[in-house]
Length: 62
Image (cartoon, rainbow, N blue to C red; front, side, top):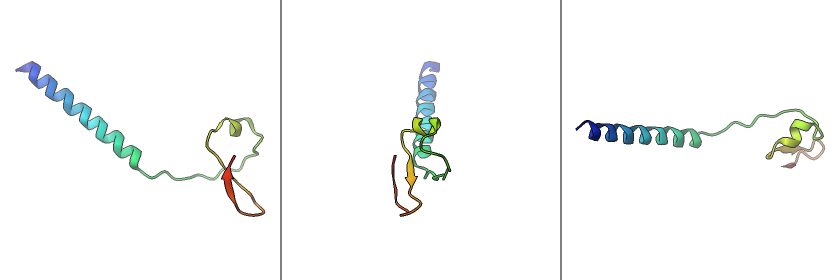
């Protein structure tokens, strides 16, 4: 009977962790504006970044 309880407990833990992971992924993310030069090394390392053109106000990928 203890093996059955261990299996049930393990399944419940997996289901709980999956539910927590899923709800974390569904939360909306806030965008943060950062002032940086596009030539800065740390900016170039980012794979997804939007640049704001000050003259036209258009956002686009880097």
